[in-house]
Image (cartoon, rainbow, N blue to C red; front, side):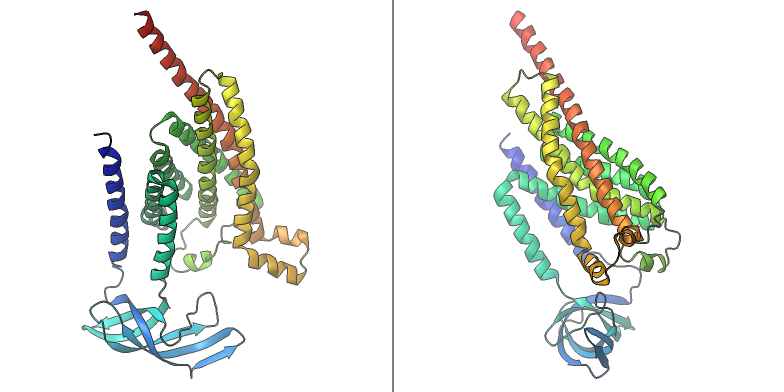
Length: 383
């Protein structure tokens, strides 16, 4: 029966992951039933109406597209791609490109067809498949559980966090609840309902709660309005003027720091649990001190990891500052730069707090477990 349990867990995880992908793939947008997005292949391209200046293009492309899926599969239709001169938004297509095209229907006939984007799903799935393969080959059963927590996190963020924020719910309260749920799923799916798992969970949650207070305090002092995130203006002016973008920025900072916080909490807790196994007679003070030493070593690299991650996301902005010879004072006082500095530093503060908090709770919990076992074994010996 014990041998069958891991197999049943693996089957349940695989079924869950497949169900999420199938559900997401088949999900229909109910906003407009007369519009559908399908995969197509470009057969011909007419660029007569396109004006190019450097890398930027303005105008529209007239194309012929073969539809590759849906009820119009195999049909060749005319379509177009609008170009407004923004490389991050425009989709410039060429012959034989695979694309996503939006079809407008009326009375079961195609009235219009507009290019949405290049079709990238197959290569994205291939890349994800390599990740899954490497994860399972190296981590085996733990890798399968990590994959479950990965997919579950994506599902919860997309189906609960994002809709909740759009519905106008309090971003900080909603984010805390979601992060508590995600922390539980991620930590307990990997560590199980063990002393090690509970220590990591408690350390993560307490550290994140303190991080929220720090985020709100310094966010108010810095006077950030939350409009520095990509597409924030587009979101607000697309019919969501009631959103509290400042608190959404705070929530984004906390969510960004939560992954690293869980990582450090698990590192410290797992290491202390291993020390406890190897040296059962270690004192609480020694165990906590070992946790502190482990936390210091992990923090030393993790804070730099956050800096590199956020700097990589804004590398082109840093290059722009270099070309403009902007002064250091001007750079750090720009809203977008101040927001990223706050994101990096607050995340680092959260890491510094999570490590000792986890060490203290792990030392107490692991040592408490040892004392109970010792008392039980003594009673059996006496009787």
